[in-house]
Amino acid sequence: MFANVTDPAVIVPLAAALAIGLGSLGPALGIGMAVRAAMEALGRNPEAEGAIRITMIIGAALAEAVAIYAFVVAIVIAFVL
Image (cartoon, rainbow, N blue to C red; front, side, top):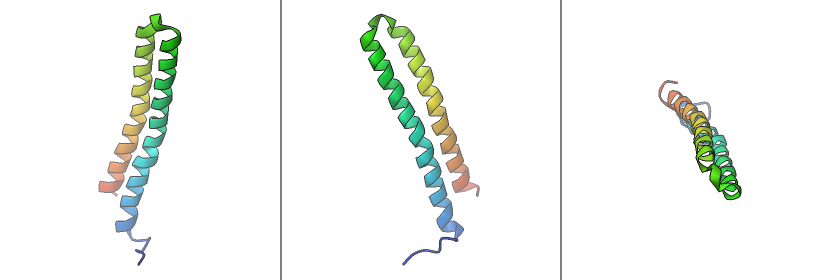
């Protein structure tokens, strides 16, 4: 009924799935909070749209980099280990 949990054929896909799943959770929350804050700032100060947009895009790119690192780690776990 249950697979042997010490078998690498069972552990490796599970580890890769956990790496990308947990690794993308933080960036998703961070990007969501950054966009929400940017939209609130735009609502309060519409004249600063250019500066707010650039700052939001830089923040989203940095948060997305963490998700890319998690993806690379998951690929390494899945195909190298």
